[in-house]
Image 1 (cartoon, rainbow, N blue to C red):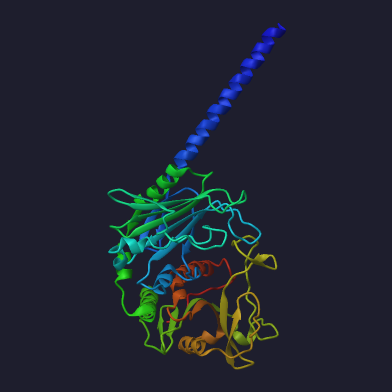
Image 2 (tube, rainbow, N blue to C red):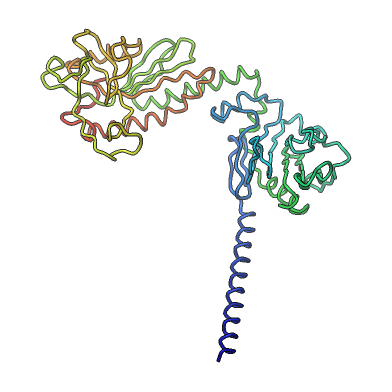
Length: 423
C-alpha cells in the first residue's frame, strides 16, 4: 500500500513537472511569437515602422522633444539624415547610462546620400558602446564583417576585444537598403542574441519600414531652417483660423482682433503670437452688479453648485478645481476686471490687458452686459518662431464646448445661466 502511494506520488510529480514544462514551453513560444509580432510606430509622419515588442522610442536624435514633430523636422537640416532612436530593456548604472542596452537606430537618408552607399555606411550611429575610450570604431575598419545580398548591405562587429568580465561580448550590426536610402543600426549583448538572431532582427525591422510622401517633401525643401519655420508658422496660423471659422470668425489682419459667435481672436503685428478667448456663458446678477454679493475686491460671489468628485482632476477645498475665469464690471473701480471662477487672483485689481479690453468693449454692445458675469476660457500662444503651441486649438475648442454645455445645463453655477452675449 505504501509502495503504491509512493508510485502515485511519483507519477503525480512527473505529471506536474510535465505540465510545468509544457506551460513554460508554451510561454516561451508565445514570447517568441510576440518577439516577431510587430508594433507599428510613427516616425514623425515621414515613415512608419513595425518593431518587436518592448522597443520604446527616444525620438528624433538631438531634437527638442517638447516641440511638435513638425517643428522638430523644421529645425533639422534637410541635407543630413533623419535619425530615430529606440531602446529596449535598459537598466541604468549610477551615471544614468544603460548598462545592459538593446539599442536600435533608424536612419533615413537624403537623395544625395542614396547615390553614394559608401558614404551611407561611413559612421555607425550608436556611439558610446564600441570601446572603453568611448570612441566609435569606423565602419570602414577591417574589424567589421561585411556581406550583402540582392537587396541589402550589412556590416557586423563582434565586440569582444578590450572588454573585461564587466563588459560581456556584444554585437554591433548595421544594415543598409541602398535603393530606399534606409539604414538600421543595432547594438545588443551576445547573451541576448546570437549572430543569426541579431542579423534577423535588423533585417526584420528594415523589411517593415514604409516610407511616406512626407519624407520626399522634407528632403526637397529649400530656404534653410528660418524659411521652414516661417512656413510652419504660416500653416499653424492658418489652422487656428480655419478651426475658428466654425464660429463665423474671419482671420484678423496682423495687429487686429476679430469676433465670432462667442469667440474673439487677436493676431500680433509680427504674426508671432495669437490670443483666443471663448466667452462660454453669461450669468445675470439679480438686481444688477450694484446689489450683487461681492467680496472685499468687489468680485461677485457666484452660487457654485459643484459637488465632490463631480469632475476628475485637481480639487480646491474639497471641490473640483476648474480652469474657468470670469470678466465682470467693478463699479467701485469703474472698470472691468478679470478673475478666477472660484477664487480671486493675485492681479485681481490690475487693469485689463488690451485684448481683454477689446472683448469687453464688444460685450458692452449688448444691454445688461455690466450686470452679468461672463465666464471665459482662452489661450495665449506665443512660442516663436513657429507658434508650435497653437496646435492646441482643437483641444481648446473641444474643452470650451464641454464647459459651455455644463454651464448652460446648470451643473456649475446655480440660478440663471444664459448663452454668451459676445456677438
